[in-house]
Length: 398
Image 1: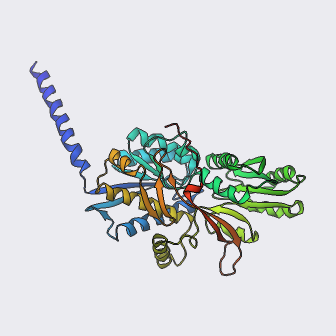
Image 2: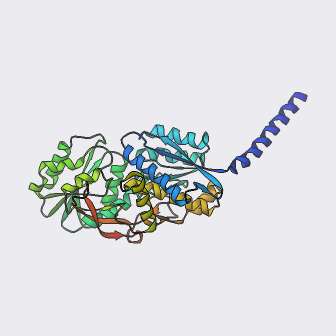
Image 3: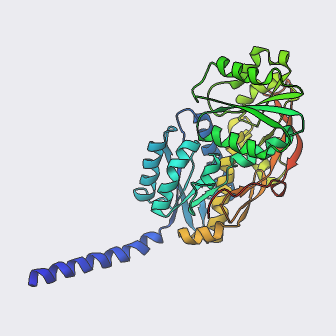
């Protein structure tokens, strides 16, 4: 009896200690942010830009203090290498071992889909930036997921503005994984006038596009009217090599969305090509973009790129939320704060849609201009496509 009583007392004491220590940790003097991204791997260029943008944005939004309401911001970096299983374990360890209050990332849609259930399991927010697949805020979504990055539907609807006209026949060339397949599905859904006749999916590691290009040519060459191959591609490989197969002989054009500056070097071969982009440093006119461009030139002697803007945007969303909660990192309080929240970004104002936590944002219809001063094809603004103009479907089953 005596031993049993001692065990019971010891258990009660441990429970009390655990209960006492939990709020003590919750009142930590830090805001701990885990950044899961492709520091290495196929999307390394994207990941590094996101990291630069995130740190610049946090610095800008806190006036250089890297603190909110007296709480120091700590960023914990994790390299998922573009591998879903690795990303999953890194996020779990960030939430449990590193005591991250919130996480940002990842670069790859495939990795993002693996991370979603981890956020739900640990009941902590994952702010998705820049992974694009619709499923992230669609059928695989849960309430802990917010996204500052654009989704496949936003890409598709804005790109359809440039291509979707009666008498136009379209074929798509995309990577055979979540980003490519969700991108094509959304693009197909967005087309109301043009006719889609073929979908070509190639491995993400493709370097020789000849066979895929030949299948595309065979589908389009005898079709009357305007003919377009729309490319949805990320990371390594240059799908624009298909132009070497003399597409002009068949009257076939190439179209695509925006990309990072090195990838847009090949756009110089397509003056007049139209599409829509998420970001190009010379397009948005607002104080946040001006500050980011100036800071980036100062530090790197180059303009900020596509995913730098994304990282900066994620930082603006986080700091806006934490300022609103006075530094409180309680997840439920953050969710309530962030649903419907508007925040300033290098692209202007964005708002998290309550239904699926997708950031509603402008996209930019462009036409490529060749300027000898730039190593890439310059996307000249045709028109800003505002959030309210895009009927972006709500694809989750909330």
